[in-house]
Length: 321
Image (cartoon, rainbow, N blue to C red; front, side, top):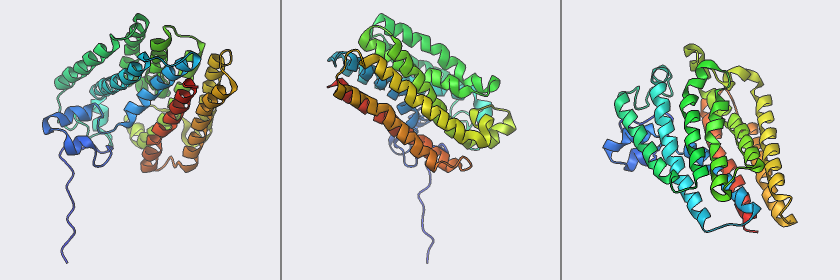
């Protein structure tokens, strides 16, 4: 009997990309290294950047009502998240190219594998930022100012793991900034509910990115990179539970602060289903997590799209009541 033939992986495939993703299958070959720089073959990061934006606009709309303009806020945030996540990942790969070359999971990325030069990556990064800037210019002055302010957080994040055991905090500060931005795009102000929602998102990021960081903890020891995964070690479960509680408590407080003065019982109940839905999902993740299995860590990390979507859907539903 002849051996079973296996379809070879496309050239340049990144190790931790989703198998059979659209970049590897459908994108023109010349664009693939750049799309891989932007993590277009790994969409979970775009979701994790986008969902706090949708939380922000939905909570702001729940305080008064949906407007036709909110449709563009939702769509513009989706486009901006895709572009800025791509620009941020490109910047991350530029600054981390030597580290990535030393880590098994990341050495297949476009820069360390030689598919793209640093100069080409810089041009690609600025192109993505320019397109995101065009989207941002369609919003209010306050929203534009918030968008520009986020660039400092994006620039600092790749260096955080060099000087602190808590680089996930810096990721949380950057990835959840959209909660403030999208809230301001609807409400033309940033009030306490938006700040509390932002803090809830940071706690959520600490939860999911600690799980993600456990994939690389052995390599991180060898190259001297810090992370909460290394810091917490065998106590990770206790810390994850703390971040779960903070995520739920801060989102609950954001909703109560926003809606208690204006909402009826039904709207309030639907909105409060958002943090509790997230909480149950994070608990489900903890029950299935094995921090010593990189494959399970990656699989559990990716399910956070569904956790964030739960909150977005309940908050959006409350805004229509």
